[in-house]
Image (tube, rainbow, N blue to C red; front, top):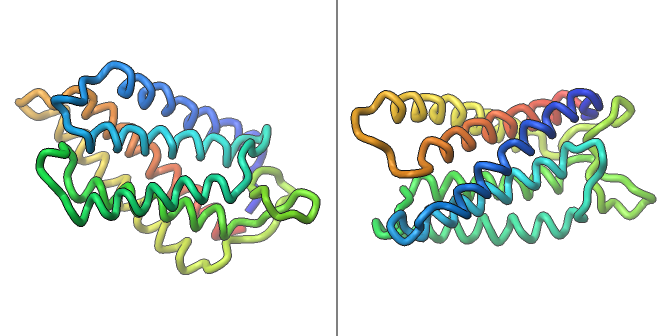
Length: 198
């Protein structure tokens, strides 16, 4: 499962680049007109980007697994409930809410199923380094995650292309949000694939 250190730095940089548009949207957008669901989606995007930076960074993991899992369990439950009770006033489609729920649940699984280390306490996931061995526990779940995020990447690319070609101007922040989702889904698919091959 070990991600080579040079590759980990490159992937860390890509995920770190996703933090800026997430923060930018949260700071500058008028969510009163866009709907509260849009702000929640932007916060979820920022949380995912920060977690992925922490997970693949060769520097180390600043928060123990249980802390990340607690955040993502809450996020998964929140977005699953939002998808079930969808209201048009939220400003986000039901499919987007369910995507955030699936992404958060996938992160909970990733944190739990990847090899752990650090002085026998098993609180730090170990992903980076050529000497890291092991694969995800329950590989069928990891394979399902690879498929889901690969398909979501393709669908998101198509959505970005359609939005840019469309005659109507998309809502503010929509293109940035879609590009971030595309990159994040591709990264998730890649990390799950790496975890499968060990």
